[in-house]
Amino acid sequence: MADKKSDDGLRKLQKAEDAKKAMAEYQAAAAAVDANTARLRAMRLAKEAAEAAAAPAKAAKKKPAKKGGSEGTSASLSQWLKDQQNSGHRS
Image (cartoon, rainbow, N blue to C red; front, side, top):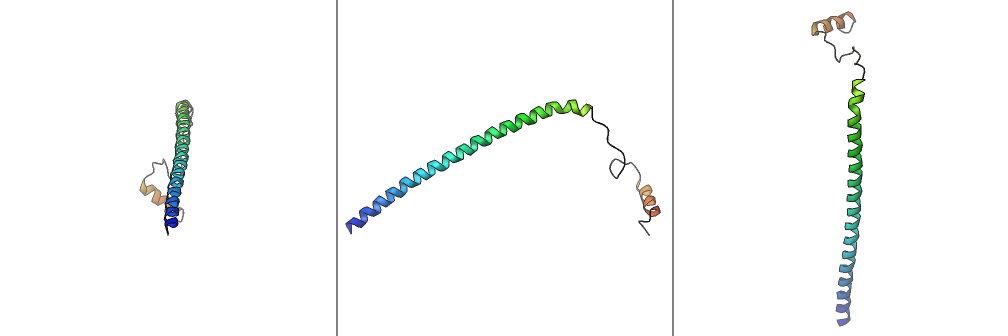
């Protein structure tokens, strides 16, 4: 019986050491992911800043939007209804 108790103690000690090693590996992996995330975020922000700086120069050369469709029209509702009736959409 005394032999079994000493084995239990060794097993508990072994499990505790394994748990410490596993936790250290987990924390190292998490730190690596955090560092990589920070590096990628910095790269993305630098790219966005460069694009934002270049965007105003391109915006001045942009062509005006085409008129037509439902966006940007200033036709009244009554005119739209007349167009609907004339095109056969409302019977």
